[in-house]
Structure formats: C-alpha cells, structure tokens
Image 1 (spheres, helix red, strand yellow):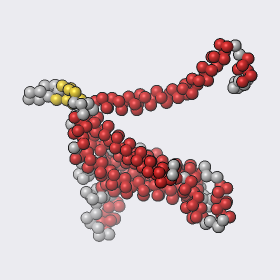
Image 2 (spheres, helix red, strand yellow):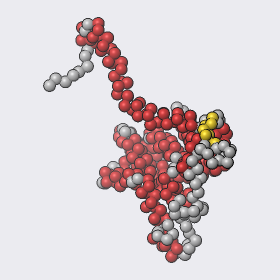
Image 3 (cartoon, rainbow, N blue to C red):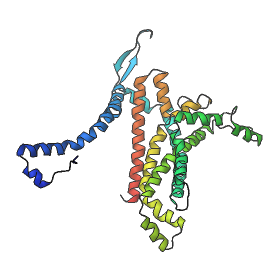
Image 4 (cartoon, rainbow, N blue to C red):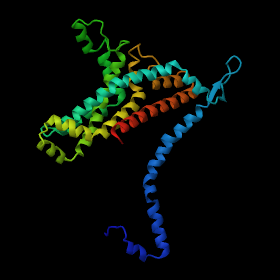
Length: 317
C-alpha cells in the first residue's frame, strides 16, 4: 500500500487550474480542521459559560409584597458588581487566600525543585519508581485526599494528635482557628508538589548535557551546576508552575468544603469559591454569585498576569 506524500511544486504546477485551487484550499483550511475539536469544546465549556455568567450578573431576583409570591427577575445593571466591591466577606476570603499563597506556593515550589534536581542527578537509582511515588498524591482525587488528611487532623481520631498530646501539647489542634489555614496548606502542598516536580523534571531533561560537562571542566561542583546552570535554564518552567499555583490558590474549594464538616473554624466565607458556592446553593442567589465569579476571575487574571509581567521584566524579556 503506497503512502501518501506531500506533492512537490512541480507536481502541483502540473495540475489543472481547478486542481491547484482545490489543493490550495485544502492546505489553507487543514490547520483549522485539526483545531476544530479543541475550539469546539473550548467554546462550549469555557467561553459560553463565562459569557453566560457575565450575562446573569446583570440581573437580580426580587419579591413583591410580603415576599410570598414567586420572585421576578429584573435588570440590575452593575448593581451586583457594586455590591461585590463592598462585600467584606468576599475580600476577606481573597485576603486569606493571598496569605495562604504567599506562604504555601514558595514552599511547594522549592520542594518540587529540590525533588526534580535530585531525580536529575546521575547517581540516583530507581528514578522511575520515585517519579511515580512523588506523583501519586496528585493522582488521588482531591476529596479523597482531604478526607484522608481530615482523619489525621481530627482530635478524636488522629493518632498524630494523640502522640502530640502525649508529649504535653494538650492544647494543640490542627483544626484550630490559627492553624486550620496551614493545615489546608499542608494538604495542597502534599497534593501538588509531585505535579510541579514533573514539570520541572521534564524541563531539566531538555537541558543539553554538554553544558554540565563544560561546567565540570570549569570546576563546578554538583551544587554549582544545579545553581548556575540547571535552575537558570528552567526558569520559564518555574514561572509557569508559579502562575498555575497562583490561579489554583484563588480557586481552592475542596479542602475547606471537606474540612468544614469536622471544624467549626471554617465558615462559608472562608475562601472566595466556597463563598460563591454557599451564596448560590444555600442562599439561591445565582445572579450575585455570577458577579462574584466574574470579579474573582478578574482578580485571578490581574495577579497571575501581573506576576508574569514582573518576572519577564526582571529577566529582560
């Protein structure tokens, strides 16, 4: 069976005029045919929901009289957005997540970088095993991970808490008002360190080994090669993981939702996503929830794009 190959310019020139036009049309539209499946699902499950949320955010429901009748939907303009901008609960949740990200994201990325550098060394054995072992926490569903850690945090069930109490720290509580945020940070660090490690490890595999040999000839130790060659060359991958982590931080939902069942210190406004969920499905205020979601998306875009521009400016890009 003969394989179809790309025709040469001479073969194309030998075609009749209609054949050349048909070939040119196929060549022009071939990339769009390959992109069509992605564009279809991107439009259906990303663009249309965003546009619909923006549309819904312009309305509100109201009840007339004593409020016993069915609510009516009225146009509210930018009224929902004005309410969001004065919503202390929403911005308290955003501030809480910013504090969370300032501490958790650097810790997670430093751990991921260290693991990636260790796996990239020539002396490490069983690299495939350790790659899988580090990645397994990410493969576990978020709800299951939160339940597992919730068991380890629960003062009535956790063997860790019992050991800590036996050592004399009887007031220690993973789910206390001052520690529950960092208990959540521990869960997300455990879940996503392996994921970020794989991104950084893949970037390290693309670094030419000749650079390492040149560094050794110049007298660099293993630490010097990691610091002056490996880390600078995978800086774009580090920036990517940091941007993804910033976006993920503002979208945290599963961990506080699961832990709120066993802790009274996680309110319905603990994170922006949890607040939006509570507003929509407990207060049935879908229109205000749409405005919350749009504002949260804008805040996320500003923070992630601002960080990206800052790093590009510092690197001279």
